[in-house]
Image (cartoon, rainbow, N blue to C red; front, side, top):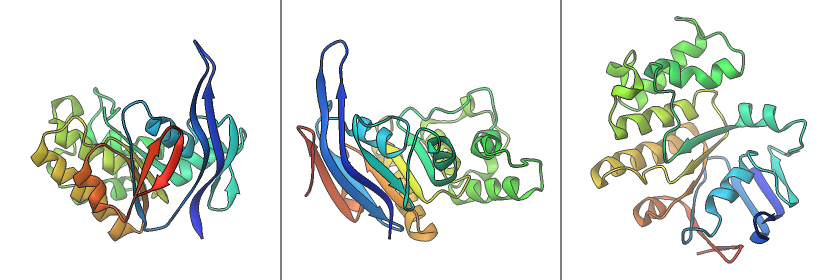
Length: 223
């Protein structure tokens, strides 16, 4: 069974001028599978990722997560339970500690995040997994770019989602740090049986994935 399925997804922006970005995307991913979406800048990779992650609504078509069709009324609950996001610019809360950032999805899901509770213990396990246990109580503004992205990966796994969506996860990092982030990201899929979709220009990262798709002129094709 596919954990995520896109059916005939179209996206057109109407302002300031009409621009068709996606034209009839049919796409699916199973648990434990890793997929890279490549394409030139401006082709709509981020838009597609946002639609798959329920952050944007398609102009036409539908998204299914674990067999349930995403609707206006269900998208917030589905997103919080089933989807984790990793962004190029990290989107961490600068004045909060590393552990507090990782626990943010649990807070949004109204779980107890007190020290010693399951969510907190899980966050500590994730910190250990990404090699940052020694940064647990550091404010994230004091971390390096590579450390911030590792925190972002741990945060994405906080609620044990089925799907991880990563938008240029190493775009702001040097090559050596990018390699570390790539290895952590792909190992997450292998060890935790997560479906991972990554939008990237990085051929090295794409090559580590099971399948590569190319987005061009609104059409998604398998490489």
